[in-house]
Length: 108
Image (cartoon, rainbow, N blue to C red):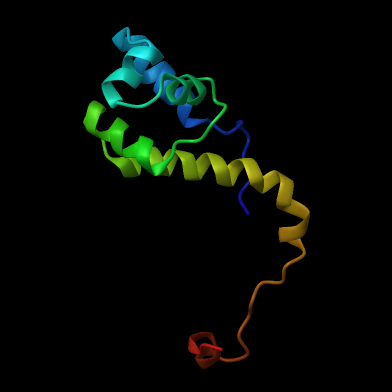
């Protein structure tokens, strides 16, 4: 596993700091334009809920990005967040080392 020195960045922080604030948009206004409940965007920018595929598609359309952009941020956040909690359990797992080169290609 890799070492992380900075805390994970929630996609809601990116949405708030890089999109809403510079554009002068309020969560309510964005929610209305995305046709979603205002609480969905309010909770996202408050970093209380994750970006869902549905929200990612809507954000991508509105901000002319990709849904993958938003989902990648969420996945990175999720992995980095849980990495510390699972560190001991993951460290206990042995790395597979094949006895010969052909063994790595076999499927059990």
